[in-house]
Image (cartoon, rainbow, N blue to C red; front, side, top):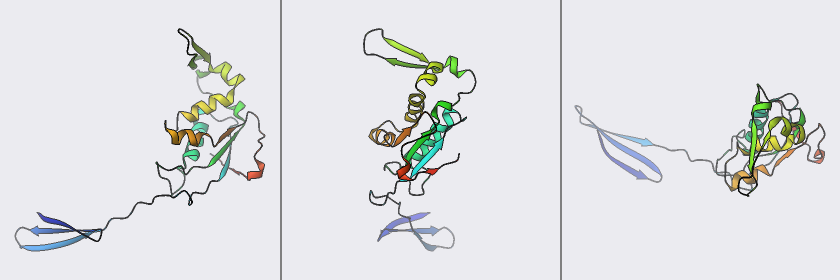
Length: 173
């Protein structure tokens, strides 16, 4: 039976009364403080993901993880601690199963009755960068933090990119 709880200098003490022996046991409960990353402490790395022959979902999931910073031990969901991601060979991404014919991209123009739909077959042939960006956007938070993280994503249709000056690391997945 707990008699009382006390707090002294951010340490909690619990006084417990045990029934038969009439002893009072004092236990000190120590809590660890949660790490909060500061803006000055965050270092941003550059990563290159090669999407040649990979599925759309696996490339998007890896890119979203790197953009959010979930691979770092200093990750905090409220802070923007992610890295820059360059995706090359976006034109060689594959969709499994029958998704090329059955999966559709819908958007509305803003006019009455103008719901447009495009098959992923034509979308992947014409704009594979848009299809990948849409998939990554769906895996990021729907707030200002997710919009900021999406600006660090660069997608290229072929195997060449324009960010050699940043010395990006090749990330295998």
